[in-house]
Length: 312
Image 1 (tube, one colour):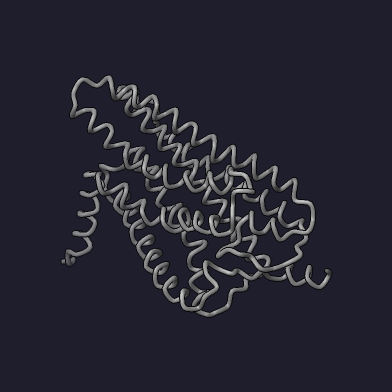
Image 2 (cartoon, one colour):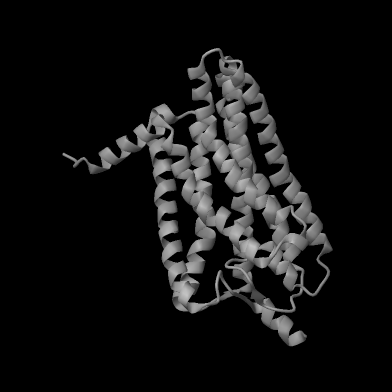
């Protein structure tokens, strides 16, 4: 027992998405393409919003923050998996594992709360249009964007400190990055405090924002249905449809991992859900937000034209 504990305390083995070598080549190519699209898409969104003064509004300010978080969330997990496949080395040191877990939850929590903040922004814009600029002041926008970062830092650090006190009886993690649930299964000490804290945090950063989003959109739907013109209703729903798509992608997967009973969760389901919110969602978000947004499309075109125009 002591020998195994010492081994598990020094390093873990990330088994990855597949243990079959013939599938790893396909996974490497697939995730490399997805990561490159994620990086390019999210950085373009940030640059387009930053370079176009017409987009210096609360909605696009929050979108730029979301793009930054999505980029960081994917960068925390996908490159390590690609390196592991390429080098055939699946080990990760104990400190690096805790660091990866910290940043995964740090960016994941910020992502979840930011999406709820964006729903509140749409609620104010549609339900209180005359008071929008007064309510969504620069001071409040800074607080709504910066608050999740400070809150997430505290929560993620607490997760790591609670994990650091555990003793592990094995070192093989059936996942492609260090996450709470697989690590807790390896522990041979009492994890009740960790599990209670996971449920409390999940309630705060998944269930509560999700309920706030539902409440915001319930009010939005009521307000939109009162708009006399069909064109006005279409425009309002079009503005919100992209955000609702992101909500469905993110919360549909995270609720299944962190709020469903452990009896219905399996390692395969957890890995599939993790792929959705660490790779697929960050990749799709730039497309979802730009496909039906003419202002953002125009800013992206200006950015690309500026890059292609030779300097005199």
